[in-house]
Amino acid sequence: MDCYPPKHPASAVWPPGWLRPQWPAPDPVCAFCTSREGGFSATPYDSLNLGQHVGDLPQAVAANRRALQQALGVPTVFLDQVHGTEVLELPLAGAEGAQADGSWTRAKGLACTVMVADCLPVLMCTQDGDRVAALHAGWRGLAGVPLRGLAQRPVGVLESFMERQAALGVAPSRWMAWLGPCIGPQAFEVGAEVRAAFLRHSAQSKQAFVPQGQGKWLADLALLARQRLESAGVSQVYGNDGSAPWCTVGNPLKFFSHRRDRISGRFAAGIWLA
Image (cartoon, rainbow, N blue to C red; front, side, top):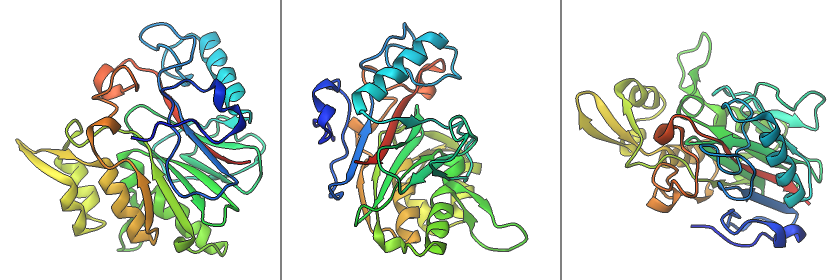
């Protein structure tokens, strides 16, 4: 489990439970993943809830977001995540609160940020450190939808982002990724329709599902993301390996979990260029 002081100069003020991705990212790249620690929200959102849409007091969420930005030393951009495939380039006027499931930037000092509470945060950077991205990968966004009018594989948020970057001249092989905490493979029970959505993309997805009977399956979201990244051409993937310390459901003192608590806050993961 990655839990280290970040290399950013503001490291001394980071709560000890926050995570810094342990990966061979180039020096300009700084990244973070918060935990429940370090905020102002009361139960059941205690304490660093960053989601405005979950029923927490607006003033508490605002204070939490200010505390995050003060700790990082750079502004963050929060999106209205809709389990889709849209990824915005920052800076962009009106990006705060825009409907999208990821952002990327070439600008320095601006943190691409996603919120999660069981879904998978995916942080990405190029090997030369000239651009970074943060993607929100719930199962719907990860499985994707079939290309309109074409009998081809479904395209999810990861493939959509990689294809757009390739169109800009950035080959998939230039990217590396870090997978943050998410619901683990012993807790993520899904129906047969979820498994079918992934199998439409690749038969390899079978490896990520364990039958439970009565049409139910346990799904390994992190493994599914690794498979999708690798099939898209990203060979360097770090972070979440599906083990217990990464599971949001199984670590209630550390992570928010909608599946576990139903009424839950949101933690965040993000990345920027120093």
